[in-house]
Image (cartoon, rainbow, N blue to C red; front, side, top):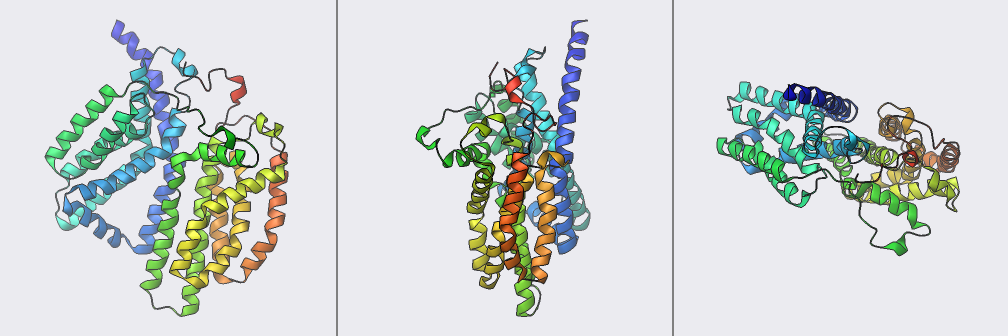
Length: 419
């Protein structure tokens, strides 16, 4: 009788976390799946199958490292949304701390399912085409997803669990049966020593920096932290594919120049889309920021400056790949960051967030720049108008407006506590 009551009590928690994981997969990972499909269309499926076949044939830790990077990257995208409220009011419900942690692990695992299914599908294709045994790889995919989830959970003993889970991610899909057995042992060991989920709050180390112009920059940095490196991956991927496309085709110098303009502008748009989307979630508008002695225009300029500084590595790489493509992309950069700062304030209106709309605008802007490179000067001239429109949007925001990606923390006494 007691076990039946316990099952009835835990079932709603299971359904809740399962739905959260599915929604994260639909909102976040679906865009990555679409990008993989687009790459397969551009480079042909045979190219991806050949690369995947080489990874599976190696049966070494190198292939496991590649799949570990993929799984941990997806888990890092899902973890903040899933673990956001697990240290607050949800602790009042009749479920233990280990159960909350395991259900959060399940939700992050479900968010990774689209990528894991794609890896399984590619493995089956490789097995049929090259007769490579993939049974141990397929058996290790669930362990890879669970280990990736354990690697990003903010648990009490994370300084022990993160190395163990990272090692587990590498060996789970290395294609050897003994690695598979070790992965299962590491999975259970990590779960035993993890401890409860904790709120990641650290006191500021440099209090003097929390004043003046740099306050908003530091708030943005604290909202992103190590996640700031993730958006560079799709940006560098676009530049790399553009360079491969130019080298493998005999185009005229003028057409090569236009292709590099397209790839450079699109890479910066994608980078700003990821950063702006994350900032709209983790640093939404709230009443306190309105009390500081800055105007809406100054807040927009600070965000645009923040995005522009982070985009400088892409400009340097574009200059290295094709010096001629630098001036159109550099002239377009001010308008790109201004548009990203504007859409960041409107992210709650779009189902997939601010990143979705910035990506759509970026594709159109990059195509236009490739066809008419001189239009970059028009982009530069339109920057003050975009900044003015963004400042008006910032002033007209309703800080107490309810939407599912943001709640009014001022009314939740446990929103930043460990209770």
